[in-house]
Amino acid sequence: MTEEGRGVAGSPAARRAAPVGLLTLLAVALVSVNLRPGATSIGPVLAELEAGIGVSPAVAGVLTALPGLCFGLLGMAAVPLSRRWGLTGTICLGLGLVVAGLGLRVLTGSTVPFVVLSAVALGGMAVGNVLVPAWIKRQPGAGVRLMTIYSTGLTVGGASGAALSAPVAAAGPGWRGALGVWAGVALTALVAWLLVARRERGSLAPTGRGVATGRLVRSPTAVALTVLFGMQSMNAYVQFGWLPQIYRDAGLSATSAGLLTGSLTATGILGGLLMPTVIHRSRTLAPWMVAFGVLAVLGYAGLLVAPAALPWLWVALLGLSGWAFPTVIALLTARSRRPEVTAGLSGFVQPVGYLCAAAGPFLVGLLHSWTGDWQLVLVLLALSGVPLAVAGVRASRPVYVDDELDPPGVRSAAV
Image 1 (cartoon, rainbow, N blue to C red):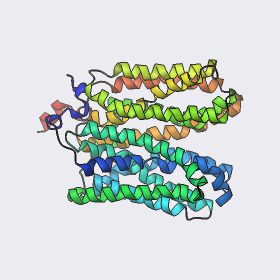
Image 2 (tube, rainbow, N blue to C red):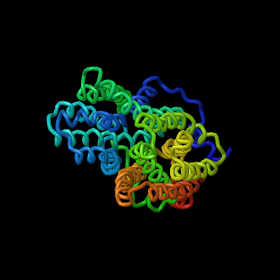
Image 3 (spheres, one colour):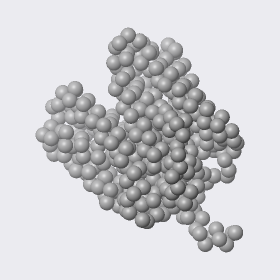
Image 4 (cartoon, rainbow, N blue to C red):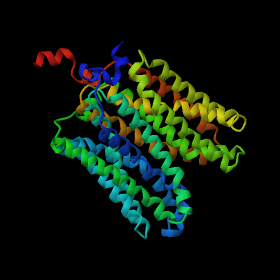
């Protein structure tokens, strides 16, 4: 089997079967589930927020764009912080910010503190986004299992935040209870990670020099992963933000449009379960990457030509294309040897990708307002499948970022 087939289990130590403790499994599951609900739970209760603290349409727009902006901009601080506090210690810090931000924002009575505290919580999530893959890389022999739990948990958490907020609010606690419950869920994750930090004992110590962002720009694999993540994230945020309206403008009911968009999440959960194992076992990922791009083109083309004729087919094609997300998340560990390189790679790829995600829905809204229909938007979105596939094929090569930064010959000469 090639190095690509071995994926995250490429080293001799990783190939040995290593037991994964219950605390490790629980910690990864809990942190992954808590890195999305603080963002996705707001949309379903925006009307209640407007009545409760006077959220205006402009502020609602800010709240919609805030996750991508925070994940992008604040995620850049994760790796520098980890050099001082260690991976586990910085993840604990991030979860503490999530608990504080989500818990305090439901106590506020005006929009400015609500937005600021939301940004605090999202900043904590950004830290987890970047550092958890690097922490998983440190666990010998457990990478595939933990990455499967992690990538699946991200999707499940995001879906839960969107699906449960309105029913919980309607059941009696209102929007404060519906949003505040996620602070309690995040607290369980924080407790688990504090136990991990106590077990590791040295985890709060600095982890080393790390990898400078400027060096990663010179890695073709890192650049390809960044383009892949950016294209996928942009498409995902556009789909969640605008796909319901596209379907409603095509004549479907609001309920049908919501169900169709929700099915994207269900498809994503399946991808999260499958793709880490596919990366681990496959000789080449190139056919998968080409398929992700082709599926995106076909899905958007269907929406352009006949959106109401076969609506479930188009959303299924886009959902399968979205498997690029768990793929690129798993490749962060599969394309790096050392945890510090994984951390640097994650801190390079994800912030840029999430900034693309924040810009995508905004630009789509501008184009739609300018043209008055969805034709140009869908054509451009279909064309985005091309760079997605090209970048994916390049990222699928069995190459380690470590070797591109420090070629074996250079390392040997230095020794």
